[in-house]
Every structure is written in structure tokens, then in C-alpha cells.
Image 1 (cartoon, rainbow, N blue to C red):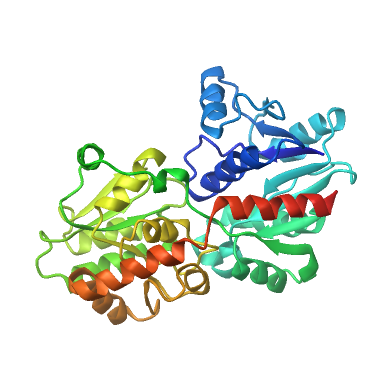
Image 2 (cartoon, helix red, strand yellow):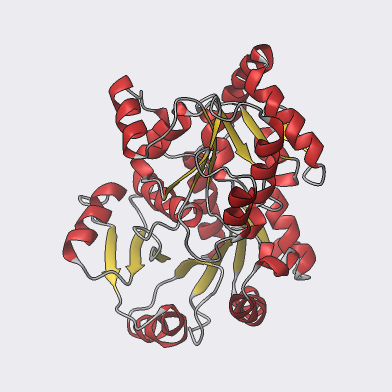
Length: 378
């Protein structure tokens, strides 16, 4: 088969969805020597393309090729740029995420990955311009797709229920963590990372996008109320102030005069993420809504005690290993934040359980399932 994959997010610092597509392609290259893969990107810089090919491990893979398709913007990509290319250079299957291309031959089977449908459940957290296009284009994309792939059982069920789609058309894969989380981290690397991001000695870590659905102001409020000595344990909120930044974060920091206790180091380079987690005393992920939660699994893999909101995807990922709190109960978050910071028996117990639970997830399992999905589409 000729399989086209949209890899435009690789190299764009898009956190979760970049990690997913990077690891899917990298692991497909490890297991598939039969099918031809065309990796579509809008990047034209030869040096960046060389780095991408090297990091994906496809430099010497004859059945993997990066194809640059220049486009004016992300909207013209789906409406005209990619369809025009596929008319002249058809593939059997085209893999993308969310928005499928328009005006593409029905002979080309389209699979789209949906990471979550938070925009459907919490529209108040989305900019109205984004919401307009999502409401318009997602239903059309789901209708055109031959296969819709959620990133968890929960997401698969949400898609089928909220968009009234035949469950047979929707499948799911489960995310995993990158190879860099299984390598030994030297003490030199830890100190180098601490200096690079100006991290304190002891801290509670959040890492991810800083969007409203992530519920970060509640974490700041809980931290402000729970800890008397804030110089002893600080709060690190790692992630870029990019698209749809939650302005309530800055207001909560200012309200409680926490500018010296809450650190915002910005976007964390992928190669530094394991060290950041390893340095953390606790990892807290207080989201209202998720599709899977790769950061929770990353922390679990390293045995960092996790406190996360009690929502279905976190229960699916963590099982009975991590500590979960009621997202609607501020006191529950405060009490459990203190407990997971200071109860050493609890911390040890959580850490051991997390490392065991994390072994249930791997990118090898994920791409093996994707390969079956592709074969069924043939």
C-alpha cells in the first residue's frame, strides 16, 4: 500500500499531538518494510528536514519519504494544496488528525486521529473563531473519514456518542511515552536541566498547554491555600504561553502574590522532559477534560507521584496507581496536594504502582494496531 501521513506538526512544538505523530511514524519505520510511506509536511528548510528524518530513524529506509508541499496557510492545505497534489500523486490511505482534506478522490481511504473533543464538551474554553471552524469542519471531516481513531477507549466512545456515528467506524489506539523516558538520566543532566530552566530544589510540576480546560488556576489556588511555607515547595507550570492561553493563570499568581513561588519556564524541549519530571517532587495534572494524558503516563513511567483530576481518561491511564481528586472539590485538591507532598509511605506506594501500570502502554502496541486498521481499510 501507499500510505500518506500528515506530519506537519513534527518540529512545531505542538506538545501532545506532535508527540503522537512522531512516535507513530518512528515506530512504523521499525516494524514495516512492506508498505510505502509518504510523510507530508509544509517545511521546506533542508536542514530541518534532515533533522526530522534523522530523529524519525528513516534516513536509510527506502520505503519512507518526506514530501514537502508548500502552502500559504493551514486552511489552504486541506482545501486545495494537498488535494491538488493527491490528484497527481494518489495514495491508498491518507492519515491525518481532526480536519480531513476536501475534494479528494473516494478511492483514497482517509483515517483521522481525534485526540479529544474538548471543544464540543467545553466550548466556553475555546476562542469563538476556532469554535466556528471546529463546529463547521469536524462533522464534515468525520463524515468523510473512512476510519476515525480516538486515542483512548473514552475518546472513542465520546466521538461515537456526541457525533452520532456508527461505533464500527470508530476505533481507538492508546498513546505511550517516547524512548527517551527509558534511558538513564545522569546527575549531570539533571543539574544542567535545573539550571537551563531555573528550577527550584523542590517543586510540584505541571507540564502541558496552558489552556483554560487544563484547570491550572485551581492548582494555583490550592497551592496558595495549602502551603504555609511556599519557599519550601514551589510550583512549576511548564508550557508555552501560546494559542488560547488562560489569562486567569496570571491573575491567580498576582492575586496571591506568588511571582516568586510560581515558576513559568516556558516550552520544554522534548529531550529535556524526562529530566524535568525526574527533578519534580510531585506531578499534578488538574484538567477538566482530556483525551488520554501523555504527561500523566510520562510521570508514571519514571515513578514520580502523580495527583490528577478524577476524569475517565485519567482513570483509564492510571488504573489504581495515581492519586486522583474530585475536579469540582477545591478542598479535595488542597488536602491531597499536601498529602502527596509529605506522606512518604503514600508516595512510595504510588510510585511502585505507577511503574507497574505504565508497562501496559507502548508505541509498539499502538502501531501494531494502526497497521491492522490500515490493512482493514485496504
